[in-house]
Image (cartoon, rainbow, N blue to C red; front, side):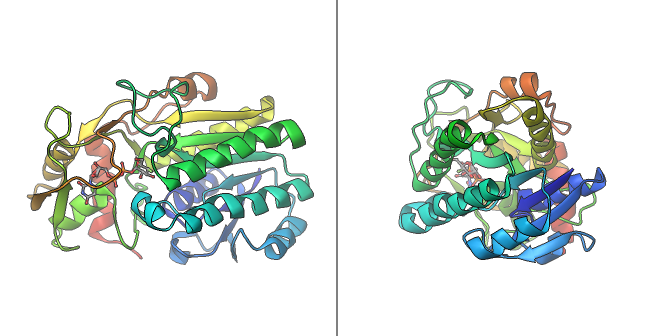
Length: 325
Ligand code: UFG
């Protein structure tokens, strides 16, 4: 298959590219490198430096290749930043996505896998979140992703666009090669911050909130290995070959771990202490987010390969010991 990977230099996108190249798919990466890393894309992959909001450049890429499908990983994705600067989020995540969708339509490419998020749900109503859970985002980041999901439903009806929106819970870990991994600047995610604290980097770990209504007072999340997210994307393309419409699937392992449990697991995996201090709650954090991925398992045939927290952490640890970028 020939695929356009928008945002293929980012954390999840670069793992996707690696996964596809290993399976001998033909890949073109399109990325503006605003948060991604050129070094995370293998040399043999065609790389186009561009912004998906640039209709002219995107049009030339579509004119130069016959893509079977597009995977769209480009986004601003920091919840806190989205509250402070919502215009940037709506412009980037919705406005620029519309430019991409129009270019696909123009080029006659009718299959898309879109990176969505657990943030479309807002505060959970029960123990686990399945696809029938109400979508009530509590921040502009979640709103922007939900809005695109709605656009995709309309596009299925109007233009026959086939799409799958994959709502990631907490993407984590790194490729076993340890050549690519999670490297954001600034880093806001728990697992990289825990591992940096072990290495004495990053100015010390803060545990945000110890008074949540959870088993130990800290927030509970569902960590899913980044290569398992990649496998779901390829299964989604295969699903779209057989099904018309706009589909949405939740991706998580179905088990929640508290911040304190992640710290304990990191101490087991690294054999070193995780220096940390307790701090007030971070605004916008729900107490618990755990997925039901029953639909993805049943309809896509998805089965996470790395579903043990310690294994996810050790893959991340191997990367953090020697990051390449
Ligand atoms: N946390 C800390 N210290 C840190 C970083 C995080 O205590 O240095 C805590 C957070 O407060 C939260 C948990 O660790 O309770 C996980 O935080 P992350 O930032 O790693 O991940 P989030 O759950 O906030 O973010 C994820 C996705 C987002 C999505 C969001 C929905 O990464 O894309 O869930 O709430 F929007």
